[in-house]
Image (cartoon, rainbow, N blue to C red):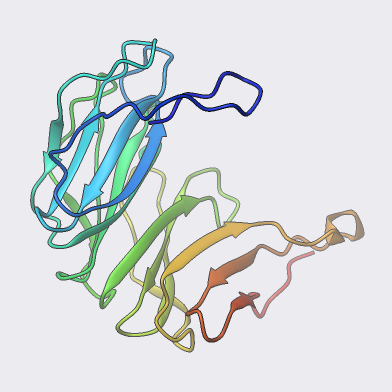
Length: 214
């Protein structure tokens, strides 16, 4: 981490760990419900998803391993997936084509890996947000080996439905994100557009659902 003094001036690098071999992704959020932002890492060379507890002043504890069964761990994200009020963890791992999640008991203790899919070939990125307006976080994946952006419907308890393909025409799909990109809400349209970052040759691409709901 690099501390910010609040005016955009940054201090010297503060090392959290050097034990995330082939570190590829990092995310920060409160994992133990103590009011400060802890840190997550995904490291591909050791297949590891781990977290580091913040004492509230930016001092981080030792590495706490969530799993070493994310083969080629590439992406990590956290949000509440089972509606119990704490941040659960998601991973995408490129060599086992896997999107998975890990339930948090609220104190930063994580349960067994829960597989969402192993059909995201070359899984690069995972993200979660409510895609069907039912109040829970659904999951999105980007996978580069099958050029696929897909989503997985959450029933509200962390049980996910079958893969729903958005596109298989995003060459080397590396990342995915979702937000409302239109100003049409005031005109009764409620589209949720998928913002997809494709390969560098194609530049930024946008994909919208076929159906609009009003």
